[in-house]
Length: 262
Length: 262
Image (cartoon, rainbow over all chains, first blue to last red):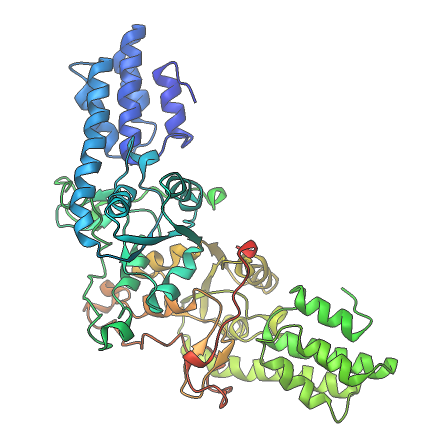
């Protein structure tokens, strides 16, 4: 996909050719640099880009950072900063992995969503590099199948053993003790730590709180961990990106996909 | 679909043209009556039918009841008995509904699965007849989409308001208090009350145990009900059909669908 103007970038975001909040922010930054190079009206270009996906918080964030210096250099800086943050998040998250970890992930929080390396998939990559990762179960992820279509492809590229499963199979596999760790991205993290992510993440958080692998633990009660009903999983981003403008999960209204996307 | 021999009935069961344990049992009974009318080898017909879906317990049950009287009358009797049991289960289950109930169901446990009326869908029909049912959320149900393809059609025929949702959306909708009751069938119920059903039912049972509609209840903790990790939902069949040959959920190995069915 080649975009030759800010409007084309905005169209690509709207059509979800570019998706994933960090990737959207990066694309918008490049879009604004493109408008500046072409001598287009920058205020108009910014409006078009900002309207392309109103729920992606990285979008106004990136556009604001481009305002005083709408150059290709600045957009590349933002891009590199995003990838660097993914690497730092992965370095944090890899501490959660033990040798032989069998992980599960939902949707796509990989390089395709973040401009490179990935947040949740970055954590999986880092764990695989250290020999801690046995395999990954990849939720298909309804709607749009971004797990089956994007994450599975990324893991294939990274030579990480994985299997795509139907979203509804995750609970049963977790109950059978076949999942040690659930790693997902977080679209947004409220000031109180509540996180929001693609539909289905909340279910995984609840299911993960059930006793896991009771046989291995010996005591059926030991595996139970309290999880607040209103919280999603703490994703690898949670230590780095709290949103002070968003008090808790009720503040954030997820964009719903149209029925046709099912 | 017309079947002219026991082998054709067995093929229809194997290809899932006929599915749902009760419907499989009924079809096999008619298949054996067909073999007797044609003067075919009855032992061979029974073997072919029994092998068509080894995990459906109603299949050997129905075949055993046909052995001493392989007539069309006997198979019709079994069919009518099955529908009658659905009506009795629905009469029991309707007690769980209150006025304005917003229900959720998974997979298909309707007339198409049971030879008429339906077990879980029967309960929904009975509730709708008494004016207790506001609407039904229908899980698409992976694999094979039997919720979206069969249950939605049945509810449409019965003029019951409903909406098909992605399986992974159920948890989030339940957390928002949009589901008062989950009603599913049960493929099999062990002697201790453990139930087994289509993949995804276990997740609904766990999610249903989270505090529901905390605002309405006033006290966030009041909605919490303990649910054993190894149990699925008590379906409407649970009072009527315990399987003494199956001690608990570990005894029963669900037929897994091949990857292509996803």
